[in-house]
Amino acid sequence: MKVTVSRGFLLVFLAWVFACLLGALPYFLSGYIPNFTDAVFESVSGFTTTGASVLKDIEILPKPLIFWRAMTHWLGGMGIVVLTVALFPLLGAGGFQLLKAEAPGPDVDKIVPRITGTAQILWLLYIGLTAIQTLLLMLFGMDWFDAAVHAFSTMATGGFSSRNNSIAYYQSPAIEWVCAIFMLLAGFNFVLIIRLLRGKFNEVRRNSEAKAYGAIILVSTAIITVSILPQSASVEEALRMAVFNTGSILTTTGLFNTDYNIWPPAAQGVLFFAMFIGGCTGSTAGGIKVIRHVILWKQTGNEIRKIIYPRGVFSIQLNKTSGKKDVLYGTAGFVFLYFLVLFACAFLVSSAGEDIFTSVNTSLLVLGNIGLAFGNTGPFSSFPEYPAYVKWGLSFAMLLGRLELWTVLALFTGILWRK
Image (tube, rainbow, N blue to C red):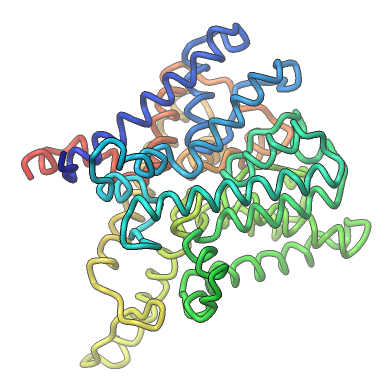
């Protein structure tokens, strides 16, 4: 069976919708989330690795239900469709259109010629990193259950925890460092991680997105560390808080170890801008993605050069090669659409009586799959009570963000079906 573009997009969307509806049943049937709308919201938040929760007390849940919450993160992180693609040879169908529809970023980068081989290698890396983090967390004091739950949440850049106070519950610098490192790894391009493991350092060193990702982390961490140093017990604590929370927001994970609402405005400002960035292409992170910011930044420089040299011809250099114009057009279109959906989502939330600050924060945390923001949507706060129509709208926004807008919105245009 040939998987065309339209069929691929439709199968991806239906697979995610079916998984989210099925995932809501354990919450609903167990009685811990008796409202079906809330159960669906929790399930969508899990599978899309958003991490926003309607539950006010996580610790009263039975362990199987807590584990299920974490498992929805872990499966959604790499993508249900990628798992399907890895198994497609058994079904006799092609998987590239499915992977392209689900792939988090402007392009799909194969590790090996066969797309099924790529999916299998990605899953092996994903499982391996999850296992390593689980063992490290156990080494530093977590029991096996909490270690597995937080490893699932971290590698999926999700944010669901087995504790009401997330990582802050443990009061352990070692655990915080482990989670911070693995959050940053999960937000990095998995294809590049594999190439690093294969010794292809030059490919990573000249990768434009990798360099930008590293620069954003270093600059953000430095600014936050200096800003919060006066209210920290030591330089190590300030650095740890900066790295952890930069990693949590930038990679759209949503774990927390402190209340950054009490930080100085400069530190909060860095985290707020990080909410508009996201992780790398080919990672489990959400958001706009670093590569799109790189493309627009480079094009901004080109526009300035055109003013100075009107007859000059300039192109975007990505990975030391000239980029195609269709990548620029696609990026510009995506960012415009992202903000359009963001404002529409904020309007939806404001219709329930919320102020503009809370409305924008809520929109950012669902569309970017971040899970927490500022104010009453920040750390140590449960998700606000909204009417059912708002929660269904926010659930749809989470799916839009996870599938990068185009995959879902294209289904509602006649152009796709006429193709």
